Length: 345
Image (cartoon, rainbow, N blue to C red; front, side, top):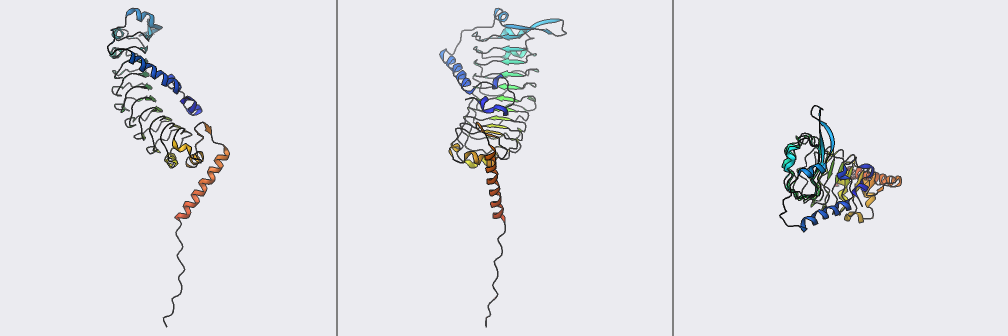
């Protein structure tokens, strides 16, 4: 079953990074790690060569004043590369794919100031840090050994993929510099907290398969529409704020929410239309679907099923009954009738 299926009409258009199925992503991550386990720590040096460049270059475009031309796309996947120093002189490159090699250093890319798109998945990187690249829009560092999010400050960066790394805490993502970032993929890391993702322009956030126990520090994500928290250890729904006014889709599948009362903490999300709670203990309650709709009257779909009009009508009745009961509780009790004083004679 895929997150793409879960989203259906509620998920905004996604880049290739977000369109893969969960099962495929899991298998892919296992393949990368198995490859790394089969080889020794030290690789035979394999630098990028001119012959490899000739094979991998494509997409001839005009450069500079338009009088000169250069190839702007390079694909050198699965070449056992340990060194891409040669790229320093290919300053016109705009699209670079160096995935599935043995790279530990991407610093030669700092010279590619026209770079728009970078894919460096399945290497041995410990950091995604690069100099500020003024035109970089999409960057993918999935399935490496990256331990932090420092040194990412590209002003036009829109999509950042750090899936399948070893990140424990998000730090260094400066909203004043990452002014275009709308999609962050951190699935399959070791995150223990959501603190540090203070990016008000963010629309899509993928935090599945981490070690999260609660949501915190996301109050300023007023433009967030999609939030994936699948397969964590979340048992409370505290941390969702009314300031998260754009959130439409929330995936909490495979967590530890046991108390249906926790759903009341989502009622202040005005645009929440789709909620996934499959594989949480609370879904075993007989009134699970009904309680969710009572708490969130604007919810259109729970898990895989849309609400029927009959369910809505029943939830409205329950909600009205609860309102009347609450009003009765708040009414002041009438003063007791006073009996006339008895004569003392």
